[in-house]
Image (cartoon, rainbow, N blue to C red; front, side, top):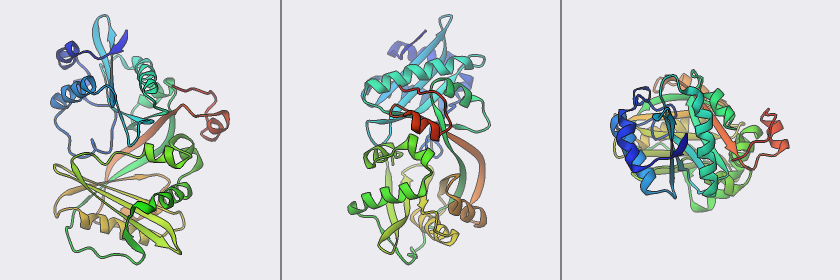
Length: 315
């Protein structure tokens, strides 16, 4: 049985053996500072109950015991959601597909057209997510640097992002992102804007763009949380070099207070950024390889052919 999480379920969730309260999915924010699981689980579940328009929580039962729990939240817009928590009792992994299916239906009823899930590449969770109609979009590698807090050295062509740059950034996204990723993540400006990861409510956000011949060819976003790690994201046109990527990465570290850890999550198709991070002694590969899965309601036969799928599945 699967149903919406109720307030009376919270004590039972804490007592349930949900794999030692280990979360099976990741968000950009959870890769940084996050409270201990025994605190995060009831906090996130309680928020989902109190804010049903922005979060959805579903719980699965097996012989009246809690076997699984899933929480989904909005990304940057109401049409794009992501799994922020997925916990499963050992031996109940086969229930994940049905649970995520119910979550997909719930967020669809709230206007969602896509549901994201970021998982470890080394796990078997991807198979269960595919049962729920999610498709593998791309893989990512996590690198970690350390904030320098130094005076910023602005690379030629780099300037602060302005409000008028949104359309230029969408053109950059279209040029820098493979068609199979855009097919699931967003083919229009509105879809892409809604699907971007949230910067978070409790952080300082800095954004820069790299311009060449009046076109935006690079973008940098730095989110410095009040606690824990910072997050650096870089997007480059495929024609840009590793030197361009290195310049943006170093600018990102300059935005982070000295000594503060900074995560850099690099998609597999951003080869220049990956080469720059691998070559720079300031960045260390964390050994965490991730997969990004997406379930998209707007998927057509043509789009699904691009991502290598065979069946049309929508929330």
